Length: 110
Length: 404
Image (cartoon, rainbow over all chains, first blue to last red; front, side):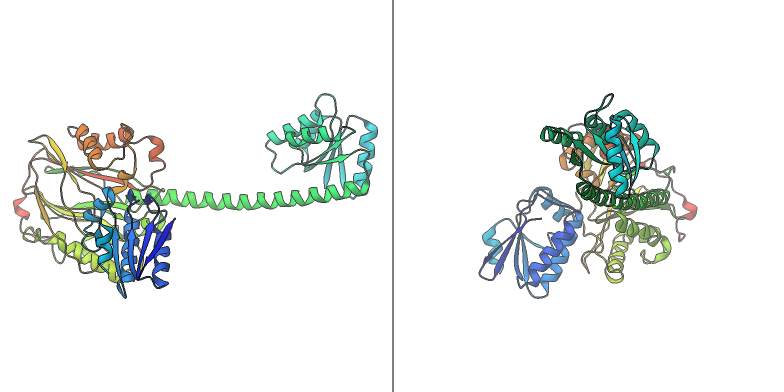
């Protein structure tokens, strides 16, 4: 799977360059994100604006990533929309994650 | 090696055979392609040295016939080319030949070509043995999974027919066995406890957790916080979800979590007390209004985040009403009817079309009309539907205040 990293000061934006996050890529997504955090990027915006589908395995992976980063840093999810946003709401994960659809707002969280 | 020499000219056969024998191989002879095919079928031969031009069946056709045949081992073919070597070589490659030797034959050249033949045959043999071992292992795993699938299917409850409520279901796992499961059982207090759950991910490890949940969620496990009495119905579903959440987070070290709809139907009144834990929003068919729509309710999944609050919701069901609980596996499929994903408004429209059907017919429609057979055989995720049909509530007063 493709994840593009952009650095702006201390904030790292991980752009998920995929349209689907499902059970087949969730483990890869999780380990890739864990590696990004381990290498020192703990002020993180995850840009999921290109996603049109996300399943429960990927949501689980997202929570693992959030737990990992919460020890030292912060994470914001940018660009959830459509069924992806509905999944966050259905599972009340919109209350656990910081979600925003505005990139400037996302940057202001740090 | 046992090598088949194919040539219509007896003197050439004799010449080639004597060279091959001098190199330490045994020889079988054939006079043309047809004769060669018959001898290949009869004997344990893996290398053929054939002339190109022969009556009945020439060397090129022999190559094609061998490649189209289903011999148990790879056949290595060396074509003998004459003066027009280049043309024959091209034609030979297209026909399936492996190598070429030009006439007149030199013994050293033939030694090298047969060494190459032996190397390829050994490689092909190794591949065939590996493939066979893989096939045996694959067949074994498949048989095991089919047996496990049957066990899992048998762990699901038969349709319930009570005076107040009846149930029907449809269940199809993605890979033989699935992470979806559901169950329901009547208590002595005239309640029907039910749950539908979906372990995140699918495949063997999700199915194992799903099966262990079937055992875990039985009445004697303490998730209910006490006996199932009518007075406790408003608190049990949320408490059940909370206890299960604590248990999964504290006692299990794995990446799985689950979404769930857990509820208890009071069959004295047909009130449904339930908690929605990240499961898709259930559909409610209201008979009096003849409407069907998803219930706008949400909740945290179980085993994902610690110390979250769950809520018990209450529905009052009327005679003829239906409640359809399902997992999100259906959402990843395009409908056979309109080729659009079976989620959101499209799913609601599909339910609108079948809302008048009995729950048994609804399950049939989902299986036969919404999804094709090929979709059902290659589902991206487990698909499960559990449907309740409500009739007149039938109180059992004599049991009313008894514990389960």
